[in-house]
Image 1 (cartoon, rainbow, N blue to C red):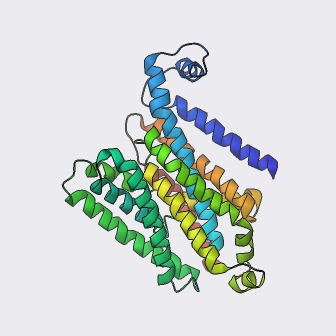
Image 2 (image 1 turned 90 degrees about the vertical axis):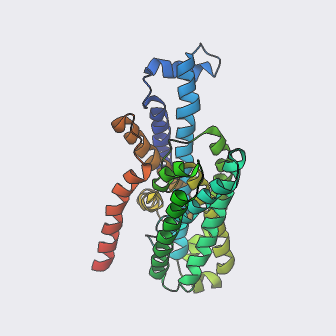
Image 3 (image 1 turned 120 degrees about the vertical axis):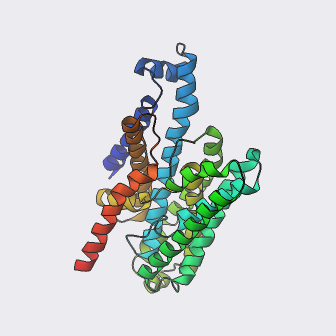
Length: 329
């Protein structure tokens, strides 16, 4: 298992490095290396190369790692808590809720305080929506009804988000149309600095509950007899998911299916135990987001294709395959 985890981590590092070399700006590989080493005090770098690598591409790469890791961990935890392999932040409406909070933050605040308040509102909306959806689904007696409730709430919040974007007289809101479909093109160091602590704290909380999530897989009654307070576990997991999803959306907007794909691959690589699965989902989520972003930049050139388009193109068929397999069973 350790070798597999190291292989996944190596893939993250490789894609992160590749992300520093790919982009619309015409910079040679040697200039990119010079910009990287110059920050370590080795040699000098051209001003353009230094600005592109460290002010544009590096925050984009770090943001991609944070987004993928946050969504991957959230998906693994939600699937374990609900015992449903298609439960993930996008399908449960949590990403759309966080996106609505992000746009509201842009509307209510001056630009100087936007990243902080928008990120916090995104986390709050995601967490509150998670609680709402769980109540709508009658306490997860039927996990499929919870997913359907999430999809309905997600579409409703998406509609309200678009209505706010196109109806409010604010010079900044139209730029948030891009965030509805997800993307890393607007990532800055300021946004990363605000979102990173939220994502790390949320992931830490999820990992700390991994043993209890393993027991919940046996059923709520069995988990309770083994000492798990399922109600407390649910509150902690939903709060942590609110932090991670809010952090991800504040960086890249609404990106779907990463929380579905990463745990699905993780179970095949490291198995179902949540301590290893959550960490693997963090790394695999980063791999998925970085690979999609690098592909977009390599193929589209100066055109910024939304990241969510690529993840949906892959995740949609996977979701259909899972549903068809369930129907056969």
